Length: 129
Image (tube, rainbow, N blue to C red; front, top):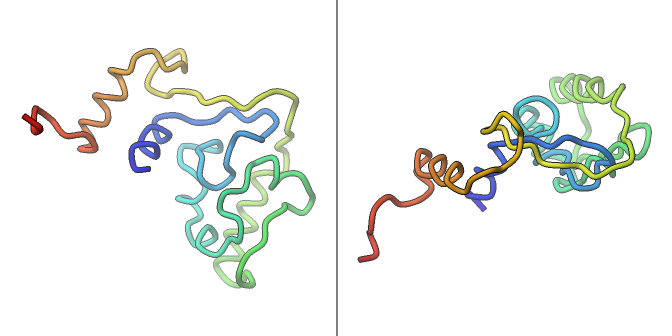
């Protein structure tokens, strides 16, 4: 799972219909997943794996929490909701944009391999021989 998270951290999702993008866990608004930007809300949300389509399917947003939102959590929630006021889902499939290339496409396995080695997620050398 650690490598998957590292790969996903090298890109972001362009959302169309919202069915392939996870609201909290994927990067689709800004440069980090919402679970990182709003960790105190993520820690108490009921459905951590909800898609963007599910969350934005209703007004108010289709999110519920294990506890009431008061104080700082309420302020964070209001700031988060304001981000989605103008977001409109459209026909089409969400797609992953690779941020390590100008084109946004994943071109070479070598790119991710080097990135994983630099982040110490893959062993270096012939440790098995």
